[in-house]
Length: 328
Image 1 (cartoon, helix red, strand yellow):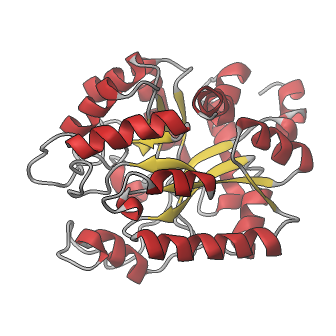
Image 2 (cartoon, helix red, strand yellow; image 1 turned 90 degrees about the vertical axis):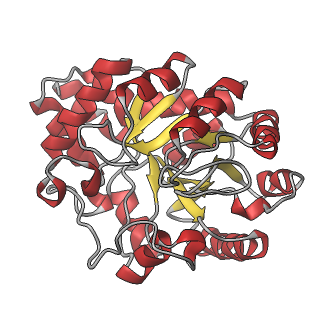
Image 3 (cartoon, one colour; image 1 turned 180 degrees about the vertical axis):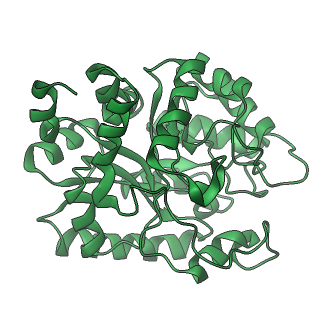
């Protein structure tokens, strides 16, 4: 990157489309050191209504106790404010719609409480549709159709990262707003979570956003992957959909332990293992083991010959413009 861009880097926007760390003051410090302007932070996966409310109470405590580091994001202007204050903008998001149970009215309640992104399903079947690990993808349910339209009405981002291909395709067609794969990889490796070229084109053709997940189980080299491998996979994405609709959604799991992964891997958090249980927490790619290393993407992008404008778009501007289109 040229000297001018490098000097301005601290003022540039860096957005992470998905972080599912064990959130604490030390993690928030790591995010701040990584100059992350804003991040979609998971606050519900398998939780029901009451459990998700409890999680939001914890998040209110985080905001109160760490107001010198983090800033709640509910509109795109809040990203600007977090950036101007040198704080990390926290976008509260879900990886499932289990929190609304069977009551569409609960979406508005959670929107009013600050939820701005929600994934429709997490790996398996729910009342909305099918997850990507479900044996049979039955598509978007009638209730799911209502959920999509209500999210459109509220101005809540629809995430399809863990959603099955048929359910995703039907959602893309039904939604009146662009949707996202907030954290995914191209199908350079066969994996139910990776997206085919056609899936990537389908979401991009409707104005959708794709966040690259630097999660090693999705990458061809697995745990041997490094940050340059991530840039190579991003370039593959960009060759498919263009540089204006690709960002970063690391899927960072900093400070989480193996019991958390086992919870994620079980259907509804308590049932069968959807995937073979991990014996250890998967490592992040070499060169980015901590959230404080987020800006390591920049020299890796430079090594790959990226222009300054391409770097700025993928690092955060594309997410910012996408959120600006969706949020009311």
